[in-house]
Image 1 (cartoon, each protein chain N blue to C red):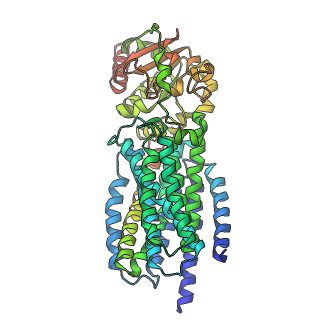
Image 2 (cartoon, rainbow over the protein chains, first blue to last red):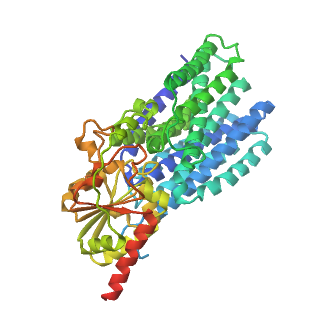
Length: 98
Length: 466
């Protein structure tokens, strides 16, 4: 079993626990924005896509990489945008007049 | 700067991004700080993308910048959709995320930058299978939510056997690749089989189960990103994928609990089929119905009103009329709150977003467990487009298909008013005994039109009497 796998597994397990700890505390009120926000964060795969596309090894890998760049970057841009739009709508009674 | 030092700077930037991602989710614990969460996430993501462009491996910017521009061109309109379209937009973004992860995995397979070990082949196969099935599964879910595809479950005999055989086929091909990585021709076949499985997985699932399905797909999309992190040895992907995966998993568990069902039951239970026989035995019972003016009079005389919104309110786009009703009643000194069932609507938190969009203060939106104790002291429970989540058979009738599902105890309110198009049973075909109770009034009509009618009566009456 490669050494990299072991260190990645450590990171995965620890991040999973951090995720559980943080996300169980998210108010159920905000479960829809939570989903769009984690979607935007997950779009960080764009960094791997940029490297695949930018390496330009074979036409096939470049095209696949370019599709991945477009798909994940659209998630990143759209995900943050809609999350912010949703969160802006959540107002308490105190701030309603503003 | 040597290349090694540059790589270390890049890693350091990714660590900062990861910290910001975790903070981003932490800020979401309260609506007050939530928008900081978006900002933290944006800074982290922008930092990670910016430093990646400096990676010496990125030599051909044309192949990076043009897709980035296309991505922004697709993403911005998808970020500006109407709030009622949020469920299908979310399903579509799961599809994009999974597509991206699958494409990168496939590209990595064909790039052959590292000598393929059996272990590496196992990782990449699993990653591509999950990414591919999540891609097609999410597309089907988005199609159902957009109503390009029928929302009802599409089922046929032997369906589960067919679906599971297809999944077994994909996994079998992965095993064959691990045993002999030289059989590269099996790889694209495996991808196609996994894509087919995604379609088979979601097609039989009905609209009412969408909150669970969309959460599960969210979890799969996260897991595929984390696995991609393993394949590429990229810790930032492992962390982001683990966060997304655990978020989807937590939401799926909440949704399943709120329906008293297991994952396997949602995925393979073909809800809606079993109930045909249950709906068959129906006796004629009396219901009492009322017009808008009666409903308005009862509401005006109440001191505590709980509104129970459901998918029907979203379909009828009645949330803005509901806000007018809320304003009028609040002005008359009536205490109005909203009871939110976890699976009301088509995705987790769906009702909260719609009501927040209509400018209803979020402190009036009360979760099921918190509000259930209030119903006995409630004068009027007004149900708008919700059905199964109010069905008292879930508490009392052991033979009911939804027996054991936690529900909103609306029947304990002094008066129950139900806005509904007709007496036809809801999506799942389950009869709702609530409608035949002595304290229930049925308000037949379109949710938006009927609430509008009540609003007109209430504002007319207040104008007449000062």
